[in-house]
Image (cartoon, rainbow, N blue to C red):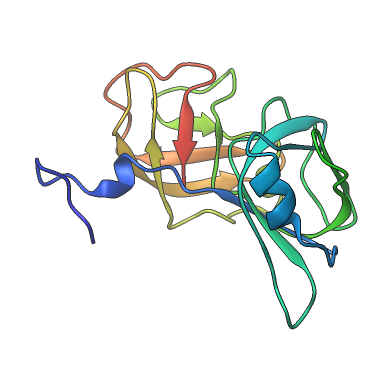
Amino acid sequence: SWYYFDDKGMSQFVSRPNIIVLDANKAYGDMLFNNPREEVSFAGGRAKVFLAERNPTTGNTTLYIGQIRNPRSNVVAGNTVTGVRTTLLANVVSYNHSTGYVRSGSNATNILLGLDAAVSNSFYVGNCITIMTGPCAGYSANITAYNGVTRAATISPALGSTIRVNDVYSI
């Protein structure tokens, strides 16, 4: 584990990317090199692309993306992903949600994850969630329960401060 100057784990300062695998056999890395501000649009929202790589065995393209702004649904296999500034057009093979924005209705013991979070109950149980921005920045807790329908993560210990809508979290 990496540590910062004050013996706090680096993970509280670095947000993990969301990872989306696409069925495209294209060199999106070249597109991103020429369009470093590329964003993708899918699930009703948009996200900045940090890195793209192609798997030479499967031909699939993996995108490492930031938080999805205003998702309206879960990202599922078969959803279409469109490049905002490039000609990217591909279907989702898989998606791993690791970071997002806190939704309205969250409190000291329950955090409502983004609508692109997993729909399976207990999916995140046992994982650590860290608040990246706002008055709770740097606070980490264990996810003790998860409701996939509401995307509510129950945490322990409780937050020591008030969490705000649109604060960023990382799992």
